[in-house]
Amino acid sequence: MPCGKDFKMAETKGNPAFACARQVCKLRHSVAMAHQKENWHSGNDLVTIFSMPSIAIIGSVRKQKSKTGTITKRLIAGYSCDIIDLKACAVAPYNHEQEYPDEDEFISVVHQIVYAPLTIIATPVHWYSYSTRMKTFIDRFFDLRRSQYKELGDQLKGRNFALVSSSTEPGPDPTLVEAFSRFCEYFGIHYVGCAHAASGGDFCDAEAVARIQGYLTKESVEMPGAF
Ligand SMILES: Cc1cc2nc3c(=O)[nH]c(=O)nc-3n(C[C@H](O)[C@H](O)[C@H](O)COP(=O)(O)O)c2cc1C
Image (cartoon, rainbow, N blue to C red; front, side, top):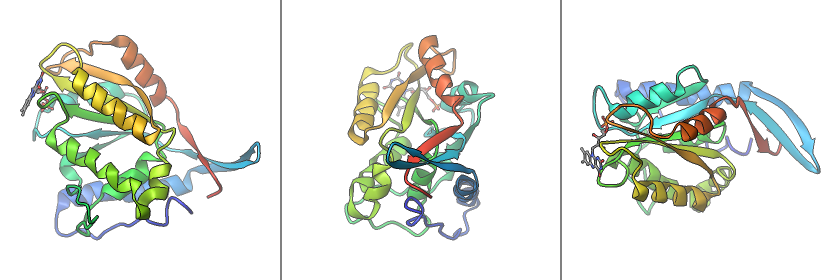
């Protein structure tokens, strides 16, 4: 089980919020195993098909009535898409020694991402960039370029990511969009587009919304190799 061998589910350390996110992670991993549909050959390559929901990762720092949360929920309403609120998910800041607390959940979240037809990164615009919470999450992807998790990082290639942004401006911030699309390019991730809304209002680009929702209708992903 190549993508599962590093899978680590730390015990809850007395924090009910983390316990909730961890349960979602645990559930999704076992569901992924249960929902593997079939192995089949594509040319000489063996392919496994998984049937899993998409995933929306929300990085607002507002405790309640987050505009980022509101617009993301509107975007995914009626589609098969789980939400991970980074407020309730233990993701420690990146460090070069790759030493993280036992309760750290970053790798568990990545295991979910590799099965998801679409991953939505939803953030408020803070100083033309991600919120601190989302930037902390994005920074951790650097761990996936290094030995222990390289195999998992390689599985991001070809995955589909979209950006949801919320700010006071009518359009998406070009600096944020460039940073995100270049991040996708670095990992060989397909950047689907950006759905932006000002102050929790309507999305400014109906075409981008339709394109993103098109990916939300997909219900399975193909992974190379047998599981
Ligand atoms: C620290 C900080 C920095 C911000 N920087 C920007 C910015 O660069 N451009 C912008 O249009 N809005 C900026 N805003 C406004 C937020 O992007 C906007 O209120 C957003 O909709 C809040 O989403 P939330 O309710 O999920 O926190 C900033 C807000 C904060 C708190």
